[in-house]
Image (tube, rainbow, N blue to C red; front, side, top):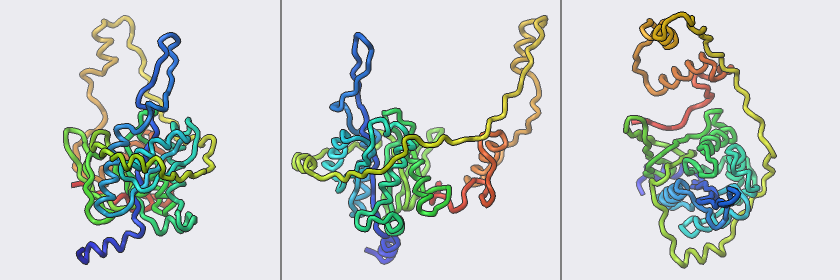
Length: 332
């Protein structure tokens, strides 16, 4: 190993790769007479997005020679999904004990994941864990179980608060299609953007990465690994999750402009023209500007605040709303 690589390895203390999965229903049974939907645990398991996340996490672990832990939030039935990932090559399985409906709320899932990641298996001290371990968290972009795709972003924001990274959270790269490990704790990622383009990112740990389904097929587990996974222990974490999380309040959006109906005596074409504003000169000044990505983001946030979609920034925050440095992403 070169001296530069050894230096970067020394900067990453306790590198841990964790993959988040969900015990998702892959198919349902519908009663033909009553129309009632039944969920069969035999038809539940890893979704396509979670399979891709597991494969990418295992590849990162192989490249950096670090163990991979699999983590889920759910009832005991989710142990079968964890054992499938153990058979594929994960070294450790963790389940945050929760009822069957808790994993449907992304905020509840994120709270359980953050609490489990803060635990240190050797010391048990959350403050010590957050100082000595650097996490790469890989997750699927969304779950079939009423998934909104918000869990990876919520986990990144929550980890940023507990690790002192400000409200911007730790580094996050969402909707990825490929991951290429470089130095330990550094990932070259690629994701799709509008217009058929691709964006390349360099993300440094600690970071949360979400991958799209179908980007990497999960490796097939051997028979010996499947048998060993059936007897492997699963760490069950019991965390007092709140029954309900407080709703986030945002300022009321401004009411739309009230348009008076055209006079009924006008011809139909004139009424349509007045309603659509066809042929009228707009008073809004429009200009095409070229900005760097940070400046473009600030311009978008300023417009959203002016229109009432976002609250005004508090004291001590910059235009983007962050108090510290943002994610270490370099678009190229």
